[in-house]
Image (cartoon, rainbow, N blue to C red; front, side, top):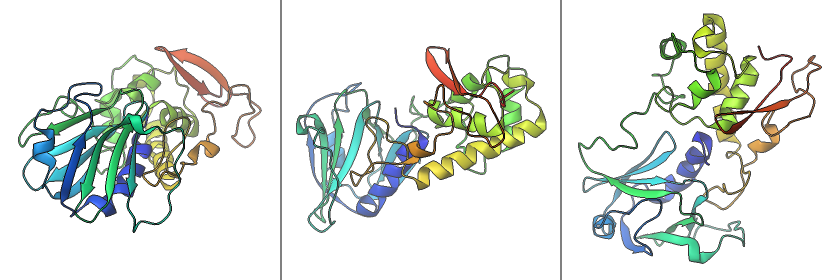
Length: 281
């Protein structure tokens, strides 16, 4: 499932083609994805101007000049592609089948933005003005924002006996983190994924905070990680997967200089965790 870097990569790819543009045509090809789409979706979007394109956690939000914001969640297999005669060449995977194109927006400038979702685990909704949308209401701070500090992380972890891996995946503690980048951040900070969140000292929390930010910034710069479904809006692959230090590297030598350990995989709450038992404590 796309995590913060993948969604931010898609947002950055779409922003130049949507921000400030009016939506001239909307084609909704099915009434639902994971959940039912709003009945007035086509009516609200047609003729609306996109005033801003934002990301909150793992969700894309297109603010409209007529009030609501369009919310898009990519789910497990969702991809957004942008096309237009004046946009140059693009790189499309022939496995992306047109029968899975579910929502198509065409701007007055002739740019087409298509949501393709083969498994239909994604979502499309409208966030009405003043509404506390259930998908957004309980989210914690953005990890790359000024609201996310070592002190905030310490307060969220205080007294918690749950493993730090599980705590970082809790979107109420910090928004947008998923399995890939939590594994990578914990490795960089040298923290064992099974360690209780409330038993991490101040200095190690500072290191963890820095590691979270660093791995996210590097992943965004690399266009995210393309393991199965993720593509940038241009259709190109992300390539941060080539920089993984522990994720999906079971049995391989530890990437930390001077460490003779071997990457191990365990299962936590039904999800795989990769770590080095030698240098992560």
